[in-house]
Image (cartoon, rainbow, N blue to C red; front, top):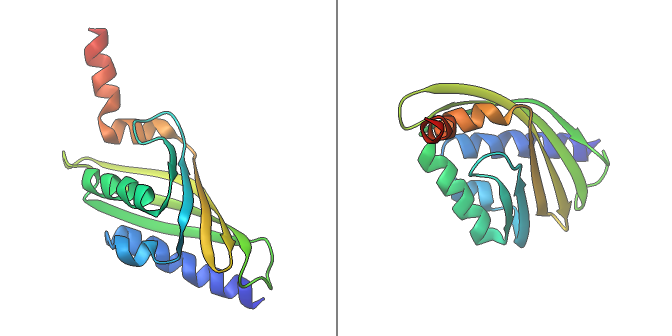
Length: 147
């Protein structure tokens, strides 16, 4: 059960670091060859390989959204006793404000694979990518092209 407690605490802290735009603290547990997958459907989507690529993606997200406030709704651990290697799923909601001052809220799930105490894979699943498209102003661009 200590694994569940440890990963729950770690995930809540990690989402707090992200919300405070603290990339260094957020990225500390990543392996150098970490892979991050963000769902398609927006310009932010894709597969990002390596710690530097993931940090660049996060910096881009933070630059687009000056306010990022996560609410962790639940943390689910595959092996409650596993400390060094595990699969951890976190359900969350996030309230963001874009550079135009518009507020948005959307939810999702992040699944991470930990091997030898380092995050080697992180995949985000979003409940509604249309909210992210609107927050990025991408729906506005499509409407302008259609006119």
